[in-house]
Amino acid sequence: MTGSKQSAPAPAPVSFVVHKQSCKLEVAFDDGAVFLLPFELMRVYSPSAEVSGHGPGQEVLQTGKRNVEMAALDPVGNYAVKPTFSDGHVSGIFTWAYLYKLGRDQEAMWEDYLQRLEAAGHTRESGRDLPMTAKAAGGHGCA
Image (cartoon, rainbow, N blue to C red):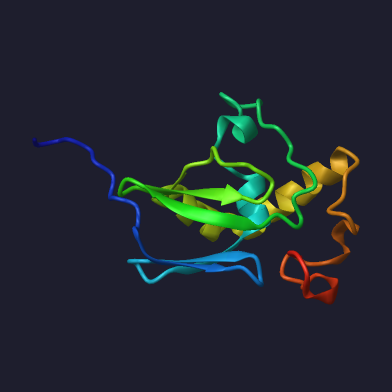
């Protein structure tokens, strides 16, 4: 069909590695990009209606997710994965495009999350003093 506007397909993952000790999902894409996605970031930005609502402005701030772990990661067709988180959250379906966006924009998304927590009077248990990549004391849980 001439004149049709089709956007280029999103990069597709070529591998997934669940790093339980550091609480990160490593996703390598076919365009060469490799992202380490913290489980906490994935959980608080889950694309489920429970988290993101049914439209703009309906997002629900997720608190107490600092030590969330990933219990399972299941494929959804050939376009997404569905993680099972240790807090029982199972309804988020992460498409390839959304995983790529999380990886590409994670620094800005992380800062937005911290600002929203602070504005609501919450912390990540020790406030903003620990960066997203710090290890938890004693090596237990996620930092």
